[in-house]
Length: 258
Figure (tube, rainbow, N blue to C red):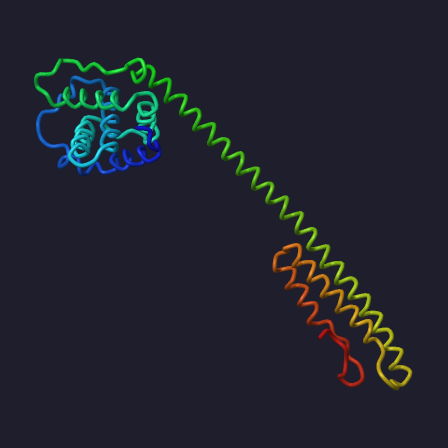
């Protein structure tokens, strides 16, 4: 019997969602709802739901019709509570006990010759009192799980925010260091070229080595950004700086990054 409870619950939940088919699937005949308490009607419906999922063919159709028939006498309840009913039976009753319950329920509902009051099987396990305790515990477990989920999500958001701030600091430091080093090299080349121009601009212009050092600093910073997995904004800002890293001299000639 013990196939996945998740599969069984999913199947009975699907059955619960198609109430529009009730009149067709439950068949005709009298319904003796007066023999049952509301709790008994709901447990009977849950037992029929389990049995329809545990069977095939005509047997499945019989229990599905019974499931719908009981649905005519009760309002839909929260899916969590319905799930608790099915869960309680599935984990605490044998398949034979669930079958006996579903059959007794169906007979009491349809038979005109039945007893005036229905007697729920295994009331020590699935009676109204035990079920109330069980579903209250399950509700608290769900609430605790939800609180845990929310707390985890909050912790995860805070962790991600701290990680983003840490990465932002590292990436900013990489860009700042690369730009600072390249700027020093640029100023060094700029000063050398100004002296060269004032002296008459004879021979090759100085400063090429400094500009190359500056370009290397920029490219090294770009490699570090990539290695750290920095957001693209940092690399884009660095490349914009690199594209303008050019020094002019001698009528339009100049040095820049290749």
